[in-house]
Length: 371
Image 1: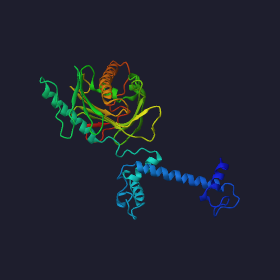
Image 2: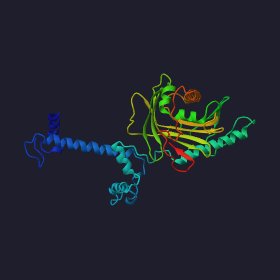
Image 3: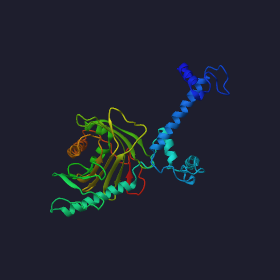
Image 4: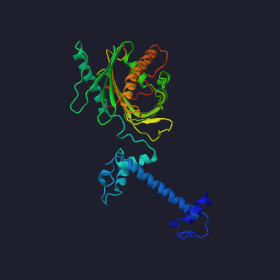
């Protein structure tokens, strides 16, 4: 290897006259040419890697003034001072919000939670959607199916399935060929706690969901309890299996008798794409549960809102059929797994208990518990 590198260095116009060492390099040193070439190659790889990462970064990150910790844009005085601003901020304990900070983390293979964790506002919006649905349900009692009144900027919801225990709607996602789906239903034979725990327990899901190939918690945010999950699942033949990397967070509001679970796709440096699977990069899910009485008594309503881009080549109506038929099937499997947990056939971790090894102490308002 060294002989090949030495030969390339001797032929390189940047190495000076062939066979002549650079200034400052002792003549006749056998490692001088290979070492110089290796150093240049490492430098080029680093520069190109930084350029690629910078091009992939969202426009606007790191383009502020030096005082803001940005790259200074086109100003000569700001160029380079952004890095210093980031380091000063890091030394003060300030979150690494600036573009260069994220760039360094990306190059180092470190996951940065800022801008990726599930925030309280997202949990709050999901809870508001449940209240809106309950209002519509009460108004529609005895007067036919519920009808949503979307705002001017929203697409209308279309009822595509009306069963005894649930209703399923869909609506087009603006600017794409995809649909967003919404299920509103009830169960009366399991408790909200059991149903909620079964959704959260990744180890238990590996036992009841035969489609799961891999399901692991990759990383956890100490500040909010948000978790990054890697999920690989079978898809109907002849499609390849899909893999999802997503962040999730749940909220149990004891005062308002409500449970919320929010998930959405994210990228994580420790889970690169695998050629055996198709990576799903667009994915969102919100599950809200309202107990009829308490968390430990049978009976609850739930609202599931879901959308993803499975990266298929099938027509839109085929994908819609797969999702609209697959979602009720998943919910029924989830319900059956909750019934087995109720009968103690399989042990399920209790995410609502303060004694659970996964549930941290409440943070934020007194009525909220996060994990």
